[in-house]
Image (cartoon, rainbow, N blue to C red; front, side, top):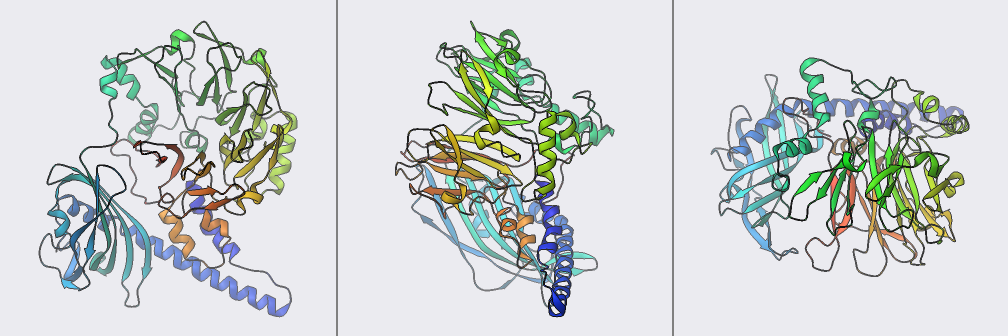
Length: 606
């Protein structure tokens, strides 16, 4: 799980900053480096401890912002505190229809703080109400005079005085001093503040309008995850009634690393898109579009109400009979394959999938790999070796032959930069809806923890190539050469794909005729702070925390693009689409971890 990346990063930072040389001079240099590394580690720990202590004061600052009052307050500021204000708002030509964009000019003079609204007076005069306020610590460092300096990322959402929707993003510099055990602000400086305003949101939630009955709405919104979290925090429970004996502890990382999905598909071929929702706990749901703007749940009626541990689904006409069949990827159970027989789905896994479906499937992608007119299937698998018990992967979910190979690879792979996982699987369509496993997944079995595999013809030669996003390992690009998958990662991308991969999608963002890949990684404020404190780290350590990566396809290679698509939070996947109908592809990025029930949230800032 990605949270472990940060704790591992700190310890690895010390290790890799210590070189090795032989001889007396080398031994002395090694000792000096060891001392330097230990000092850097101690400084990092002390800095992060202060940042943790500042959570309370920063939250008090957020409450002041919510009340549209950022001025002198004895619980926030020392007497005589000073500030650099924002001034007038300068509008610029926006790139989006219907969106007004501007940036506040920054005051250069330090002023003594007196009034309630002085720091953001120019902003608060434009705001009626703020609904969302987020502060994140980008940097922290001790000053020479014993004070502590932080740089905060500021994100605000609300309503303007004119009744429009407003979004404000910026950065604050704050100098803190400790007085009688409390951190107070000595100086606060606006470093940047931008504004975007529009008449209405691009998207709105209409679930309560498309589900007719309260029962359907409750079922669609019910979260078993929330139910278990409430049980742990409010009653002290730690056990599930499901799944099995090998996974019954609520805090297992296998629980947190498995993610469900939604498939959009016209299941009944009536011209209206339906939704199939997979469930980690509870039964899958199929919401049939009635054609009048409402939906009904029909999963049990058509045979698709599988019970739990379902991560993903992929609908397509796999037997070429004119209707859509479905593969369902699962974690603690083997995946399933259902044939569509007159609108009812019949499980044909055992009969039609030679070699069987794998466990731990995280994502699936279909394409005609060998050009025979039949859809084949690539299954990405994901599982970290940190569950209870630790050897569960090798003993419960692999064949005897796979167990031997997994243990061999685990003995030689790196525990962070190439963490051994289950093998990915390539199913080749033999016709009539029958599949067989390709040996070593055509060369793309990888034996890593893969979050996603995506087919796309990046070289415009008429066949699908394969992109694989891997957690705790480099990502891969495979070129399709007459049905054979060839690893061309270094050839086309060099060392660009070193982050913790969680998704990959492709689209021609610059309209040059070549598909460009967008890899979703992790942008972590805490990880970025920590890695900056150490010199000489592996480049992969920096790549692992600095965010997503858009690469421009030149026709021969992929080149990184410098645009505002990297720092999209803790990202899980991106999707290209022309949302504003201007002829250029936009990006929608799913990010974040989990929004918990009220009273169970943590203030940890990652």
